[in-house]
Length: 75
Image (cartoon, rainbow, N blue to C red; front, side, top):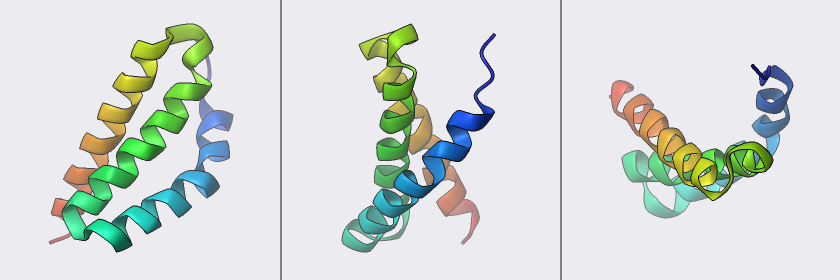
């Protein structure tokens, strides 16, 4: 089992910028989903050597879903 702690810390800066831009462009809930997808794709690309293209898509989907749920929980 691979420890992803450092990967997550490494993702914070780049994903945060993309997330903020997506939220600004698209709006609240959908912006969070788009930002989450972008963050998830970036995370998936780092895991790509293990999981391949499927890992990128799954990472994007999971990131989008988590961010979307988080956005709606704030309302």
